[in-house]
Image (cartoon, rainbow, N blue to C red; front, side, top):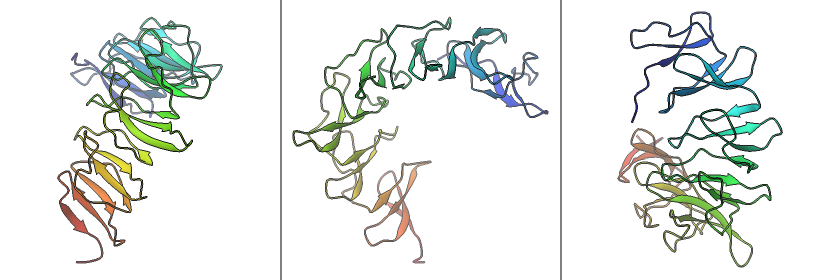
Length: 251
């Protein structure tokens, strides 16, 4: 992975800019907002006039017109953007539309080269870098693929009920497990879900309850721990191995 030479910083006057490895301001341009440089050497910025665009590591503007929002570039050289008409799509490193298709919303491309989008018909699904839909199935909700190659989706079952599951990069169900709510997998291999009985749990990549425990409320893991509400109503925290680290209001 390419290491960025420049770092985004807050300047003494409150605007934003970039400094080099020696801590010197890289170029005179200042901005209302900045993001780190992507692997392709481009960074998304908000100019002083409020417009959004991209610059290279010399501070030269690569693209600036026609967008109200730009996400950071993915490793395939494409960035999700919001056009001035309110639709979303993708641009290449020259600031040109990567393909003609537009969407209600669009996520950045995941590491597997697939992006989650909501089509203009209101359904969600996945596209490749040519903007082509890659799975015949459409969903009520489609999350980006996690680093483990699985994506959380919400679909309608035969009874018209919204349920959640996980799919692989071929669009197939990763397991038979279904849930009321699903969240994307974290890098620790765990995902927060709402079970069919209304309780919450953390599952592994096989769709199994990772700890054998259920909770009234759960949050995503951060720094190796997660805040939960146990079935007895007490709040506390657990480790990534399911070990209880603290129970509030007891000791």
